Amino acid sequence: MFKIPNHQVAGHQAGDGKLGPLIDDSGRFYKPLQNNERGSREVAFYTSFSSNTKIPDQIRRYFPLFHGTQLLEASDGSGLHLHLILEDLVSTHVHPSVMDIKIGSRTWYPQASEEYIKKCLKKDSEYTSLRLGFRISGLQAYESEESGFWKPEKKLVSSYDMEDVRSSLKRFVSSKPLSGVEPDGSFASVVYGGSDGILAQLLELKAWFEDQTIYHFNSCSVLVMYEKAAAETGMSRAEVKLIDFAHVTDGEGVIDHNFLGGLCSLIKFVSEILVNPGDYTTEGGLNGFQQHPFSFHNGPKKDIE
Ligand SMILES: O=P(O)(O)O[C@@H]1[C@@H](OP(=O)(O)O)[C@H](OP(=O)(O)O)[C@H](O)[C@H](OP(=O)(O)O)[C@H]1OP(=O)(O)O
Ligand SMILES: Nc1ncnc2c1ncn2[C@@H]1O[C@H](COP(=O)(O)OP(=O)(O)O)[C@@H](O)[C@H]1O
Image (tube, rainbow, N blue to C red):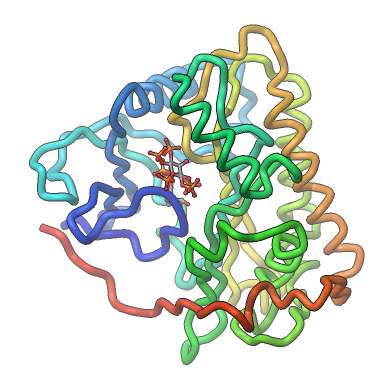
């Protein structure tokens, strides 16, 4: 039995006759191959990465496990479609808090079509990519059984400026993310800090990116995850994973400075929150909370045959 994922925060989503990923009960995430050369590029990346002996073991843990491809009934009803079989990164979570952060000040790359580059350039300058070296693509943060998740709408997240990004990173690790009051950042030290917290993981990835010249991770995202119940006991199960390799190109012996720069910028934001989690310096910016509607999601999973 395949289902529409309940905890997807960005990207193409299944439902309403659209093509998107599916999950099963065994902890697998099935991502449909995208059109043009995107799908085949992502398969090629996973195939190459899986067998590349130059990837250090401690770096592999930042990537979803890859189990090949499979023809499945597509979520849009269009019939059999090839899907990547990936590890479902949230399958062991009960109430995953998840943030998708697209890394890089540019999401385009020289090998792309003129039309695609134009579209990316526009989005990169409208979003925070150009200015910050990354943008938040989507997120959800669990509050409680009664109130569910803070899951701002895509349109709102797309309009984030630098201060919104800063306060969202803080609200993401706050005890009451849904409340309009200042985020308290009370889980910052357990989620972002610690010897295997988000910051430590980002720094380990950064060290690899300072050296690796095999791949260029264009338009790729860092997925940050934790479980609130665990964080409350001081064991956050915080994890960083890299996802979305539809635009990965050959590094050709050159450092991926676009990804590395974005990663450094994200590290700086996270570090600043860790230094002062209670600080709230935005100029009256409650993250657009007073001007924009929330979106809650707490509903049951939809099943697809
Ligand atoms: O169509 P859009 O405008 O929603 O763009 C998609 C992006 O949404 P965004 O507006 O940047 O949040 C979307 O970004 P997210 O995954 O949501 O961060 C992808 O970049 C997607 O392209 P691809 O799957 O990487 O080839 C993008 O899809 P394509 O339009 O490039 O197919
Ligand atoms: N392996 C995975 N396990 C669980 N969730 C995932 C996985 N890969 C992606 N996702 C979810 O799906 C979203 C979109 O994934 P992505 O690969 O970027 O798709 P797209 O190419 O459509 O943008 C992510 O923000 C995340 O919420």
